[in-house]
Length: 248
Image (cartoon, rainbow, N blue to C red; front, side, top):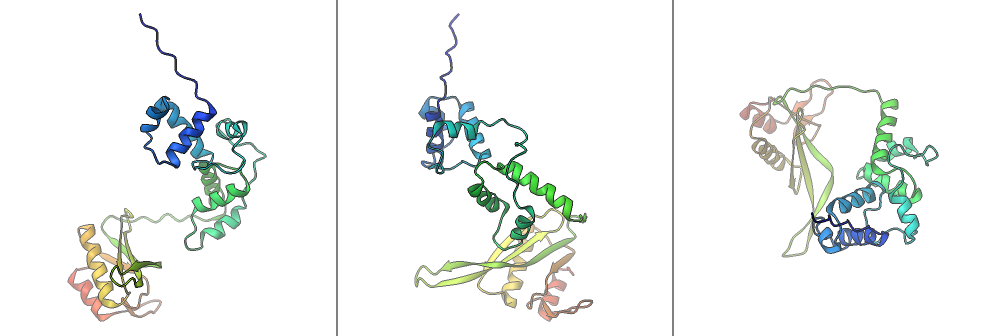
């Protein structure tokens, strides 16, 4: 009976090669084992550990050129982080998240820059969720499918370059979401004026494949002629549009 071929031991040099081929040369994961003659399982394991440790990049951060340090980072005991780990300033994190363009992933990367041995991304997100559950009251909102569509323009614009003139114009981003499923549609136009607003809603209905009973929007001028707390006055054209599509 033929003997099984013994798997080759994976060295730290191999691990560096896995990271370099994956994140610098952008080689498909399935091609890395063939290139390095390493098992697919080993490659997947090292990439997972690198992502958990926040080192899914190439070149590696300063300080990881030492093999022993890199091994320690990637092969720390899995499970709960040590108790003496540097705890993020959660109230500050929550405040930063309210700013436009700030994500939890961005905050985690900034945290790891100053605390290289801190939480991995999964634990960071979990700890933040625990913090929010302690300080924020919860409200469970139940929506029935097909009843409501929420729509408005996003706060950010995106630059659009005219290929013939090189002129850069800011495009407004309309966003609509079904309240129950959170299925989302977006559409870019060069203004938030009434014609663009009407067309955006038409395209949303077409994308969703139907019209909801209610269309909910903020106090956008193209939709609301007079913003009153109890009975806002809807723009006549938008009101006619809603009547045509049998939505309120």
